[in-house]
Image 1 (cartoon, rainbow, N blue to C red):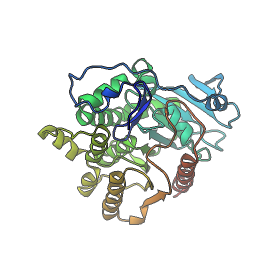
Image 2: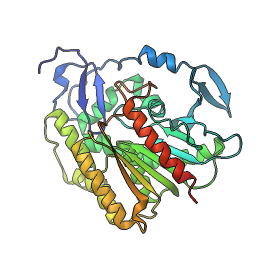
Image 3: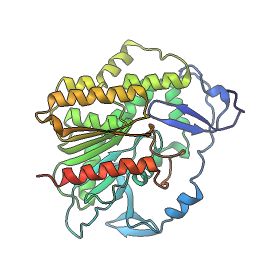
Length: 349
């Protein structure tokens, strides 16, 4: 269908749907570092309803910036841990003393920032700190508040310049960020739980399969389990085949978490995979393969759980997904599932 130039287009970028105002000829360009750079206007502002719900006033909490959401029973703490921006929510029902810690990595689809992910999946009844880390070049690390730099990387090479380096950087910076969070927040010194959505789910799987830190529990929402499948989504969005090379094939092989798990995992914490009924078909297939591979490796296969959410597509929020917004019905369904599961797992002996 034809669309007038300058009208917002939705371009699928493998676990990320960018909504940007851009000329039509940008979509469908070959992946090339020499492709002409286009300037994209800033994504649409958050809706007045979201602004009203999340109107904030500054406060002080252990030297960190705090926002107390008007009309909401929780405060939102923002800061940076070893250079990684985060949005933290204090534990429910914990008056004093250290509490467990859940660390998350957001999607690159909506909600595509730590603040937006915290609003979509607050898990408000969980008696643990929920600390949502910002992914590379997202949120506070977005260049000039625009998506230009990310789109340029996708156009240059969606796997080698975008998916793989984003995943690896987020995983590599996690141990230092975790140490900084332990120094600054009243969290206990036990194993940490992790949660990731889409490419953030791949980060959680990288942490799990490499044994970077001790883990108590792992939750995944519409995860990107195989980078080949993410590249296929990008191919479909651009309408062009990806030019595979020996190096990119080796990278995709390395970032195939079904194969990783089949080769063995260093630890076997309880794991929950939440899969949207309307997620990308390849992602759904990969999710099933991952669960099967994990259950074969776990001494207690029931420790690996999978839940399908009816009518849930890949994203958890409406575009543009940059700022906190009212929780959608689909996100609430996922939030309820995660809340019940973490309540059970965090209180298990």
